[in-house]
Image (cartoon, rainbow, N blue to C red):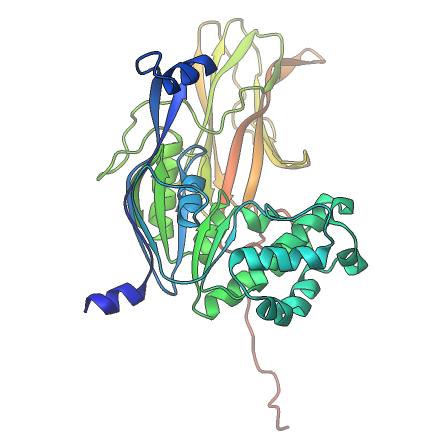
Length: 421
């Protein structure tokens, strides 16, 4: 029975800890090494008592904020890092898309680097030779494969490195943010290969900030936060928990309740200006359940909240928001004048909360929210307070159509003639 369990388990992580020593000054490290002083460091747990079981044929995601330990655990599983304590057992040959091209030699040409990288992963020269046409076709960099890698653009370098890692037939594929490489056509090719791996029953361990991809591809998801494993479950359950972690509202073993913490998704370097006769004091988002969150599921209702204080009388304030993509293209937006939603004056000392509620129909991805408080004094347009790129919005989707937003088409197919007539 035990033998069967061992075969079924692809990756077993048991009581895993990774601790780093943090020194205030480089000299402290030197003095300690020479035993010239007592302990001069602080211990930082990158991972603390982490346990995971990943079975053969599963696609398992790991999500969490920056610094949660996601990349650390992948490096330990692949042997790049050693744990401080605990064990990792891997049953199967691994191909890891972690630091693409880390084993490439700039002086070698593309084909030589394919052989170099393949042998480092553990394949024979004969195995690599059989795979070479497939690798070169996938990379699609033409005659550059005969040129030294140091002459490559960053795009060509990544395409070749990815092609090597994903086309050598592993039993376990480990992916760390690597599916966002190259242009959109190459990304589509990578995702098709990813789906092909799933259909073949390969074991996939997938780490990404792209919650849409996690939702679409993963069977189960682990949630890490500051080195601690908070939970494990379905993608939806863990993404919901992650959204609570982002705004400091996660409570283990129960529904979220506010526990403090900085507002997530806020831009520390946002551009703001205005006369400040009135001021936007606070901005945040809530999801369909009314929980503060910067990650919103596509197709669900969400609200944008802005709290405004009035210091002088403003006859007809206009409250507005706009949403841009990360390259600065304005996608959508509205204001209270257009919506005919608020036409009263704002009086000195008043504080108002304005809420825009709508359905999220943008495609999965990252967006930036800007807000404005403006109005007219006679014929003169006045900006009282504006916040540009104040918040990040992550849209989580398992179905992306063409363009910026989804028209939510309903499709019917009917026979109008029999094929035999």
